[in-house]
Length: 170
Image (tube, rainbow, N blue to C red; front, side):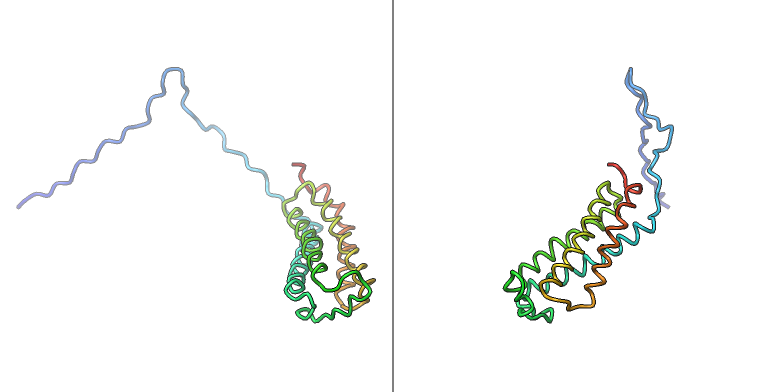
């Protein structure tokens, strides 16, 4: 009966000896990672408000940009007669960039505990209050969302300074 032989395994060389004057690398202590910090109630509430309003502003702005006559948003161009705009294109751009941009930026900075989170959140709250005030003065009261967004803007502006202690410096 023929015998079946297995090939010999090659010898694996061990660690090479360090050259003269070099020290072998040794890990003596584990790498320390930053401690996880839980989110405060202020951070959670502010980021949730900013995210919700930011997403709503962006989606509404897109509907205005796709249909500057306001038909996608059930708005009439006649509502703009007291203001400086002929259609909803410029208000859509402002809603997208200023309102949506500021609130989503605030949300991201709060979640990242960035040092500018409280300033941007304060500014975003002021933007919301200004936006609603301007909209009501130009178009009149027309939506149940206006007082909600106004109150959210005031709440964001009031809560923002509380983030100063929670944000990191770098």
